[in-house]
Picture 1 (cartoon, rainbow, N blue to C red):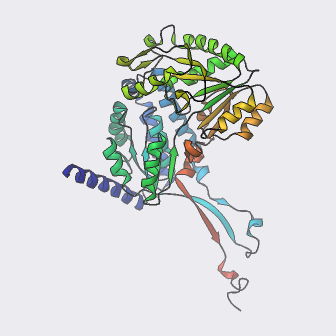
Picture 2: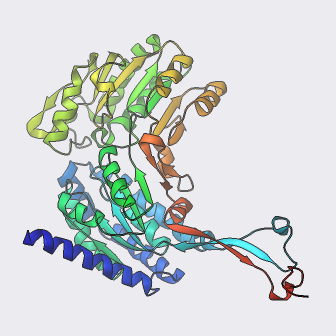
Picture 3: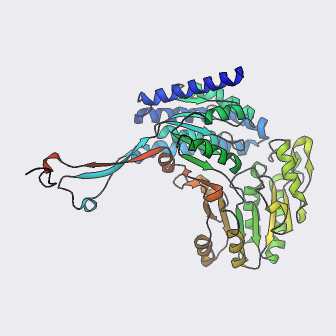
Length: 453
């Protein structure tokens, strides 16, 4: 009981300190925001090898993946924000035509104001990017921030707990390490926004806790992101791009292709082409390749391994629990009722589901929860238009899966079961700000308004 009280008191004290910092006005000036972003950029650029080491320890993440997704992408996001932040924060004025009925000289518009103290709860699969890119957005919007990294990536969590206070303003940014007790203690406190990335089960817990304080939330969840491959698509190109997106980080990416929908003839050709693409990426034995990652722990290994009985194994299927290794695997002959289609895979297993045509593919997609992403490979403009018009997903990409994450001006987020809210670039400012309406009417307009005779 003493430990619980101590944790509760310690958490309450930290949140109160962050709230006091925000109330002081410290985080509001543009110069402070720019300085924090510049320092955060330095954290990445001055610690590339330490970040890569931590990610290898937690996930056996290959260094090229670590550099690209966990360092270079966040640095690009920070650079883009620094280049445009002043512009994004400029008040927006309405044109005179919008003020019909108001006296001459009246003006109206909107301006972003920071929300206050933000809680960021981060996942383990991209533990640096998905911690510090939301933190960057919250700081750019002028907030104080508490970051709770995932305990399932302990080396990365330790790195951020040590380095963040050295680079960022410790009166306005804090890192809380720990597991469920620490997260529970944080969720009991009142925040002005909670940003959570993870699964829907915990997302519901976060949302219930937020409701106690009427706290707005951004939920970046997941789901089964489908890929439609049309008959006219070049199978070799599709396989190369699909293999890279699916098997990067051992399939543990929230927007990774989860399953493929295509006609029977294309399915056979694609399975063969994927086998060749995987060998080009990782060699004949991916387990010995430094370019191939591992499952995060035994629990996730067991969960994904249990899905391998679905359909027919076209290639792969090899596992090694001691090494938490699951080979890049493609399953064919998979049906909607197979276990592999019942949940987000979040691992290096790619089922191919055969459909007769685009109509059946669209119906299949719409029979399920709205995914975080939907991908298509087709040369047909009508097919692209139909996928855009007749389905719903957080993001929609043609030709290159997962690439929409790299475009800072695009909102990244889910819809329905895959989440709510979005961020990146200007959308991070919107997520972590209140858009305040303002109307100015001249005092000299009193007679016109009937205020005097």
